Length: 310
Image 1 (cartoon, rainbow, N blue to C red):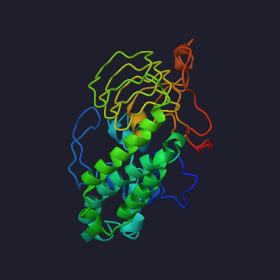
Image 2 (cartoon, rainbow, N blue to C red):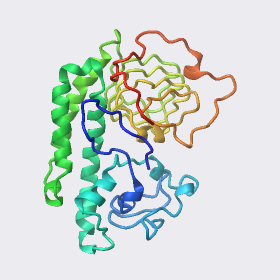
Image 3 (cartoon, rainbow, N blue to C red):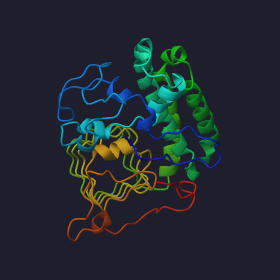
Image 4 (cartoon, rainbow, N blue to C red):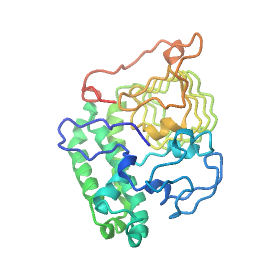
């Protein structure tokens, strides 16, 4: 579903692909995961039951019109490449349709690998932060350990204590983010804050800690979110029109896909503008809502200074 590539650590060799490749997956997100009839999904579906739109070749029969058909939730989801890893590596390219006995373990393993791949994305990004060099060695070690866990057999994967592992990685990523955000003298602390529908239009949120913040339907149009830590922030239906997220930390494609933005929203180079966002800017609009920017600006080295491919 995602068309992104993670920022690359220049010291890493042969990184694990963290971009979804639906053509190499056995439709795992369309089968393994449950969903309920809501604004995001048109029908109810139980875990382990194939979506009614899944074709025999594991493609989606309504992929081009998911939003119009009431399946907006599908356009937001991103497995970070876990689907093809489970399909092609963990289970050796043999689908659950070919070997029905593998269905349950395959579906049980998929969400575990998905969580591990999400952590790999964050760790890979953190290794591009030059100010976080004091913790780069720990980040590399955590990256290697997480990739090793994701490489396990189905039995080994089912035995992984994902919550405990996420907790350890979360603290390490927090330290890395704090080293980067230290460049901003006055930083707002909104970790885990309930900002549902908050009016933050044009707000100066440079270097803000927004980890896990509830920003559903918040008005962040024209806001300055450079160097803001957005890991786990809920941006569903948040208005990012004209906002500057060019150097936001730990932002994912899934978060962007769940939000609303426009042609003036500034994004990190590793992420792409969602196709459902307007392709043109509103009349008279400019990036960042035309507000002058002050404070730290992106410099070579902030994210290793290397251009990242789209």
